[in-house]
Structures are given as C-alpha cells and as structure tokens.
Length: 293
Image 1 (cartoon, rainbow, N blue to C red):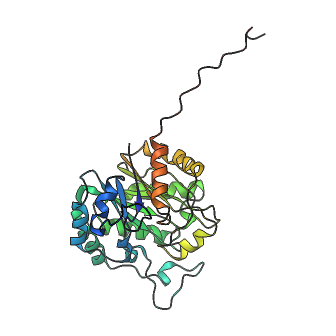
Image 2: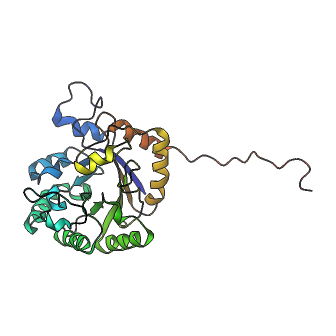
Image 3: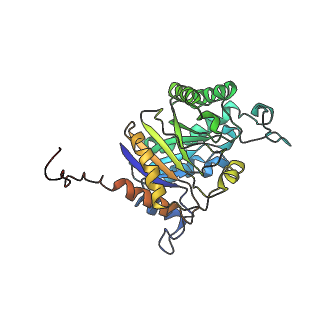
C-alpha cells in the first residue's frame, strides 16, 4: 500500500506558505510536503484544459490529483423553484446532466494522465439508495469510461444494514467505483465511516470534521466545511479504521476537508500517526515465581 495524504484545495491554507509566495507557485510548494491534493473548484464547473495542464506541470510524476466531479453530474442542479422533499424521488426535482457534459468533463482531465488518482462523485443527501439511483450510478460509469471513479454518499441508506451494505458494495465492485470512506459528526442523518475496498487500485477517505451540528450545514451546502479540528485520539481512531482498508489496495488516498485554518495541520497529524511504527510487543512480563498450582 502507498499512503497519500493531502487537503481539499491548496490556495487558502492558513499559515502554510512562506510570506510573499506567489499564487502560481503555491502548488509546487504544497507538493514539497504532501503527495496528494483534491481539486474542489471543479465542483462548480467544467475546468479549462489549459489550467489543468498547468497544475500537472507544477508537480512531480508521483504526485496524485483527486478531482471533485462537477456538481451537475451528481444531481446537485435542481429544477427552478423545486426543493427536495422527503419521500419524493429526486427525479421530480433534480436535473440529470446531459451525456455530452460528462464527455467534456472527462476531456478536461486528460492532462493529468497517470497523476489522476480518482474522480469523486459527491452525491447530495437526497440521493438515497433505490433502483433508480443504482441506475444513475450505472449511467455515470457508462458516461465516464476508463476514469478511476469514487463515490461519496451523504444519505446513510446506502450503508445502513448488512444486506443493504452488501448490495452497495456489489454494485460498486461491478462498476469499478471506489466507495469513499467519509468521516462526519455522529449525527442520525450522517453516513457512518464505512471502509470497504471496491476497487483494487485505490481507496479513498474524505475526513470532513466532527463539529456538533456541522453535518446539517454540509448536507445543505455541498461545499461547506467544518471548523472542527481533529484531536489526536480522533485521528488515531480514524487511522485504525482506514489502515486495514489500505492493505487491500495499491493506493490509500486520504483527503482532509476541514476548514482551511486547520486543514493542513490535520493532514500533517494523520501523516505522522500513519508513519509511526507499530508498538513493539512487551516481552518483559513473566509469570509469578512458583508457577501454577
């Protein structure tokens, strides 16, 4: 397993860059410490191929980019005046993207080449587990052939209950889509941290923070970030869950998506904990003198 840790975005990290670092140089400076970054600006629109090419040229061959898929591909565009309603199919208010838009998005990523680690399709909280949602996942895979896709579910119905979780894993394995292991606060409507290898080449973790009440905001605003900073015990707990997942894949890529004021520090802390050697077994204990009666 190769572990890669990084942040979502790189331009606005607090206290990370030396004074007077030019914006054009930031990615190269960032890549001196981290081996992975998530491009999140792509959620808001199909990127320009020249800009993508410039980013690829700023880093070494082993650096990995994750790309957040354009929100329109993931059903974040709603019909005018429409709002999600409990018990109502997303097809009644969300607008599926036309096929050509998938092609334009994929073409824009071509300059990344082998540096492309995964394209994460972050679906909204109203995209629950259902036959029509499964069909849409199949359409996404058919429209993005060859790309290393990952999917982040924000509706826990995909991951709750053994039978449903097995079904979700089977679908993703069939479509060669990685299941993103997400970490949110422990809210009733938040998806649980679920670690399952559904592609052999990559597994993805996205850590969103555990601040009280943050998930409700994140579910409403897909780009919202928690101001919560992970404590060491929390990071150790998360790493204990992710580490076995990494043993099943070629690359375990973990993205910190907390607030820019703490994001880089969170990523450093995870890297340090993951790099620490496992504790040596304590062989000093001996049975009491006299043995057993």
